[in-house]
Image 1 (cartoon, helix red, strand yellow):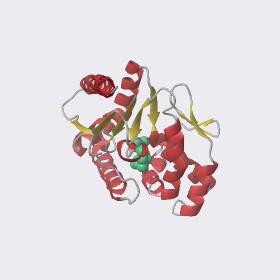
Image 2 (cartoon, rainbow, N blue to C red; image 1 turned 135 degrees about the vertical axis):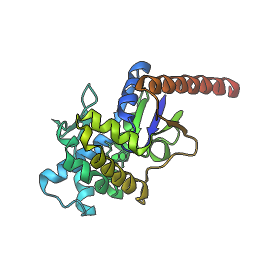
Image 3 (cartoon, rainbow, N blue to C red; image 1 turned 60 degrees about the vertical axis):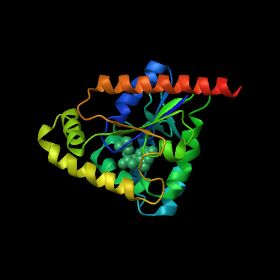
Image 4 (cartoon, rainbow, N blue to C red; image 1 turned 90 degrees about the vertical axis):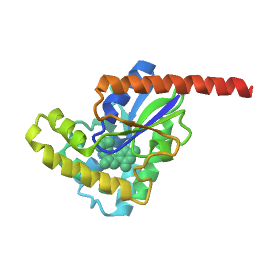
Length: 224
Ligand code: DC
């Protein structure tokens, strides 16, 4: 079974997707980590982030994989915590806008779905990478709430305003790029997490996943 979870920055996709994957015995795929890994590698090597050709070549040359805990490895080296640095976060949307970077990451992401399926989270899971996913969810929350949660998470409640500006900037770049922009797939379920606890979000996702699985089984039965 493939579950595609998309949504804007800071909507809590990673944490809930990871928990849902564990509950259902599926692989978890954090696709943002791949774009972050490419950005980190480019910064390390001094490659100009606006050089589309060089960025495409770099992406094709990297061996990107995940360890048992679902953390990205770049040429076998742990990407954490470097890929979460403020510098990478500030630049990743520019890198993710290059069609050559996206094209190089597309087959890699699809390969993870074999043979058992997965829970994949990002910006274009339901629209581009897994258009035939059995369940598509678009997770949203107000930008104030997303900034508040992120500020608490990093232990800097006073930084909420700055974090909100960063989130708004990144969402704008991700939603307005030409190639695979952040948007809700037509057949995705929109889930607004404002006012919901993390446990409640996970519960709802599990409910949707079970319904999708049963619905799929029923459709299969009806057609055979
Ligand atoms: O989910 P995240 O914040 O780790 O993602 C980092 C960036 O990567 C995000 O701002 C846009 C990009 N991204 C993307 O373009 N497509 C995806 N499927 C996942 C992330």
